[in-house]
Length: 163
Picture 1: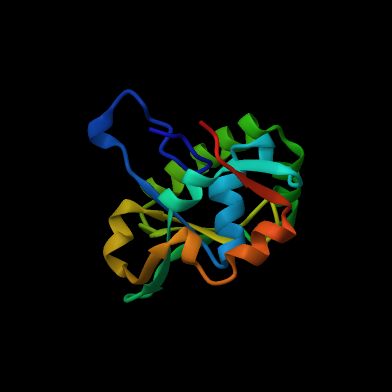
Picture 2: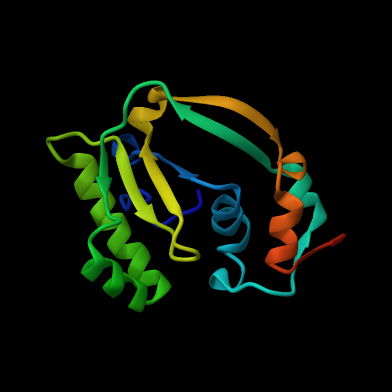
């Protein structure tokens, strides 16, 4: 299981763990976070990506069918600034600790809304208990997502056939 910024930090007790679904407000932030984040820590430009990966991924447009109750981390500029200055592993450790605290809080939030550290666009980390409040409106292969070619060109990503 891949560990992300707001993943449950409790690895030793699978029965108590919670899952997180990550969403972005634009195709560009989704592409940055899912396809480029793990390569070169979000740096862009002249980055080869296996063409098979683009064909294997899906792009979904999601809507809420019930209002979400989210912890908003977009406005706290001081903690946001401090987090951006931390190393990747420190940010992830802090994010996981926050996520656990939010998940266990008596107000029972559905997830976290936060800015992408890669381009500032809005991201959501939705706890698994709130997945039923979401609906996939449209799911298409990533290669067919409207605007993908422009994003690939803007980010100077080259698709290569890696064997």
